[in-house]
Image 1 (cartoon, one colour):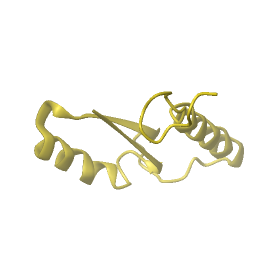
Image 2: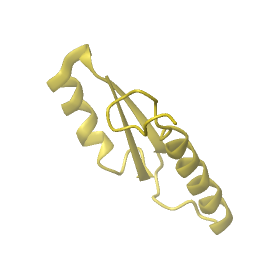
Image 3: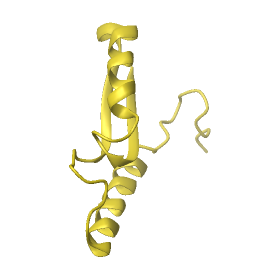
Image 4: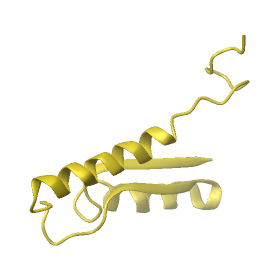
Length: 80
C-alpha cells in the first residue's frame, strides 16, 4: 500500500515531519509513504508571488495526476 502526503507548507514546517515517522513506526515496511509539496526552507514564504504561484501549480498538478480512477477496483466507475 502507498500513502501520498500533500501539503502547501514547506516540508520542514507542515505536519509531514510529525506524521511520517508515526506512519513508519506503525506500519513498518508494509506502507510506502511519499511526500508532495514544497522542499525544506528556512522561510515559509517563496518571496515572490510568481514563484509561489508556479510552485502551487506544480504541487496541485502532481497531486491531481495521482487521482486517476483504476477500472475494476472498488469505488471506481463501472466500464461502459
